[in-house]
Amino acid sequence: MDIFDTRTMLEAVEQIPSARRFLMVTFFNGGVPRTFASKTVDIDIVKGQRKMAPFVHPRLPGSVVLRDGYRADTYTPPYIQPKIETTAELILKRAAGDNPYASRTPLERAGAQLGKDLADLDDQITRREEWMCSRALTTGQVQVVGEGVDDTIDFLMAADHKVTLSTDKWDAAGSDPLGDLRAWKRKIARDSGRTANVAVLSGEAVDAFQANDMVMKQLNTRRVDLGLILPQELPDGVTYLGYLNDPGVDLYAYDEWYLDDNGDEQPMIAAGGLILGATNTRNAMLYGAIQDLDAIESGLVEAARFPKSWVTQEPSARWLKLQSAPLAGLLEPDAFLYAKVV
Image (cartoon, rainbow, N blue to C red; front, side):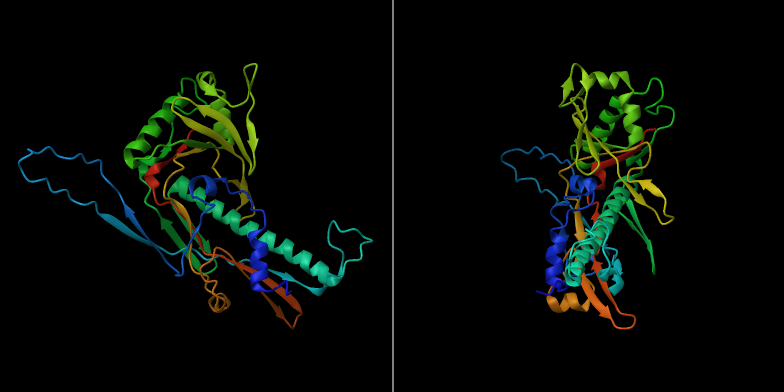
């Protein structure tokens, strides 16, 4: 078996544990991605209205009801293709963590290195996808800036769904976090028809929220010991804080960071921010076509990931590349609200 065969590598990619992707799974149906065989993605957005059937006399003709219109949006998912080089020197020497006395063949080392490199490249793409989800949910836009590309994908999130508290910040005396959540949930229901059921908080927002006496009296957690709140740690850097009976929202703290273009660590959710939204929207991870001749010839154009490997003779090296064209499709922006509360 050729370990560098495209289909062999693709099977390996599908079995790799993913990097943290809580926002993607929670708000973008990350477990069910939608792939397309074209560079662009066309989405028809139907925004219904709360119409009531008109009254009419039983002996008169029925009333004509007009159909709801729709808006067709075309998006071009940005392209991602990180690659990594493997040289003979790297294969021939002992890898980090290897037993110094183990007798692994160079081919076995090459297979192990392939697995590590695929995992690393997949983690980088997954972290970029999670970043896209974060930008879409907090700004309503995804800025695509890189080599040869400078674009902004705008999902037209309404300005009043991006809130910045001023005098009534949650760490200020007299603030009412529960009242804010209640009002924001009603706003989402009015504007989108969806019921917001999850709030994801940054670390600073969690600290301010938990320091509020009125909040703590109404927080009903799943683990309570003599009145002490014991948050439940979940995978993906997530902590379940509890359930608010009023306004009926599950609270989560999300601790995840990424390296920006300057090499500085930044939080996925900006300091002092929170995301309130519904988990049953039409949002989805959208993937455009893989723009590679090998993908076309192998029939794998419509895929979320496409691995590729080749050898250069001078200097001697093997290259591994993982390609993807992802887009965090915020198809129902009115079903979400971002607030800067601290």
